Length: 465
Image 1 (spheres, rainbow, N blue to C red):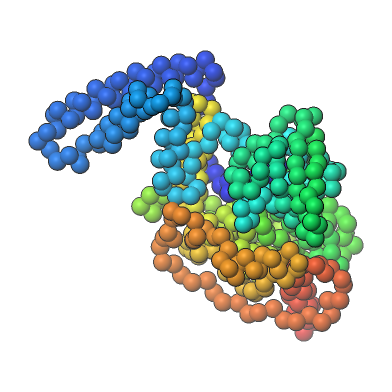
Image 2 (cartoon, helix red, strand yellow):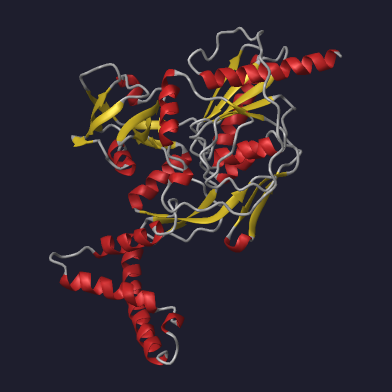
């Protein structure tokens, strides 16, 4: 199972993890540090009487220490110190922005396996819609596919627990586990009154982040589902296979599909962009006070031919997917087709903690080559095409009623820096000669395909003139 979360990681040094024995030592050290801090607090309070109270940097630590002491001494039941500390860290993190959070050891393991693209589970990608856990996609060859689960199926129960209003992370934990063990689920499918009760046997799931199909007209439909550790390698392999399949005429163009892509690793977004750009900035990250932390640029070596490129985006294209879309749009390398993207323009770093968990901390905003910050704004496509396929019609209704975007998340970061507007582009022409029955149930993809055909037709006419 792959959780629909945003997983940008900026390559800064991580703190070292420790083993179980180390954790015990860490707790003893932490207790000693707490005593030292308490002594410093007392000393500061005594020595700073003549100074304004706000000048002491330890005053708020004193509040935390006193609250912990009261809970440990007076709570009606014995308290778990680990849970108290984890709750305190989680509360501090969530007070900042929606993407800064504490990951307990289980959640951190889940995040790590998502990034690596291999885990043991039932083989579905899920999301939350209207309080229900809904199957977004089913991984080929996995237990869910063998059992007949389909996109759009809604979970009623997981391991006997009601799935309505269940947290996404809790659902992921229940679905994953040692291979060979069973998971009991009940689902409801649209058009059926009765639920389906199934027992699925967990297995290792190899998640391919890239799907590729050669369409009529020697156009490669390249769908990138997420930016994980092997995304660029898988994309390169898919392109090479397509070149082999079309070696007589070669590829004519690429339809790069970033819809429903929740993001992932920043470095992978840079590498994917670099495949299609020969020079110029790809993305810049700025930290506190607007200080540039990192700027990634394209290299001429390894750049793919100047194939016409259309990029499909929608309101669920987020984070790393927006980096790629923004870079290709700003450099005039691609035409974007679809709807405005999610608008997550922040970068998170993962810092391992001594308890086996991690702190996912927002460290920067990222900016497209032209200087745009898309935080809470998203990237507007060049050709706006709403979705009208059966599944997409439902999404269009959600968007009309107020789709969840970065700007609607409580505590989201504001965009930063007024920047140059991107240059305008013309709308795609109609292409009556694109008659092949492709994407008959996917209006956005169909229009992206026809836009690409129109670009190819224009090039052909220009070559003849």
